[in-house]
Length: 410
Image (cartoon, rainbow, N blue to C red; front, side, top):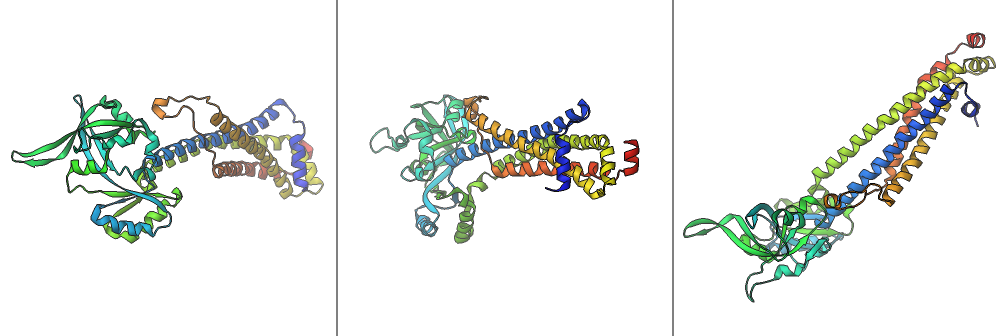
């Protein structure tokens, strides 16, 4: 143990003169503790929401999507390329089209997704997201030999339209079809076979699902499968696999990973997290200034002691180190207590529903929490650095005290 650390520790443990000095030290430690705890807890909650949103989107979307002609003529060529990727575990063709959906006089523009019922559930979690009905009823027919008439709606979309299981809905294609009377909108009736709740509002409010063959029949022969959805062994490999597939397939196809398909959303979440970190860091900064002011008062209180130490041979550098150690001990104690308190609060919030969320809005009843120990380490390090920086000026001022004046007037 160094001489400077020993003196700093003794000063911290010793009784301070006056209530004001003791209170300011306690406030300094408490301020750092509260600021660090607020940062750790807030980032854990934001990570929890981020993780929850990501999980819900992955449940409705594939890890990687290939956009372009995926009709029968091109599918075999695409499959040969996909088979070369060892990280791919399943794939399924899909199609997308925009329609107007009408129920009892209410109309909304929606995106219709044609899915291959024999393959699609291997690449997404839509089977688990069905809250009413049956996916197999997408194949239902009014009569043997008649076209398939089943459609599955997003739960929020169904609420907005007032459509429920078994209701008839009218699909109107904006492209229309050519008749002797000219171009007229193409319309076809379907029966609601199920309701889907993925937990992600954008999907649940705007998506409807048809069997792939029904979608191709409705939109016309030129409307072949518009892409392939891919599931990987690990989601984290999506960007790398998408990049390799794009190079292999060339410009005829557009390959996008899960993160690229939701780039705006995740960028907004990241910005929100960064801004929250900056705002809450101000609490730690204020507490660090409190440490600085406390050390200035402390150096004034210990002026005589500084003079005696210098008279005994202590160098200005040693005095500087003593006061730096004093600030480091106060800051370190506050940071350690703050991390412990923040982790404890995060565990408590995640374990017990002290804050209840409206399930019809968030699809969850309690605040999600996900502690990222990288974030915890960053918060602790940054807060500690602020505390150290706050000690430099008071330590410098203490090291410049004249020993003769300090002993005489101290």
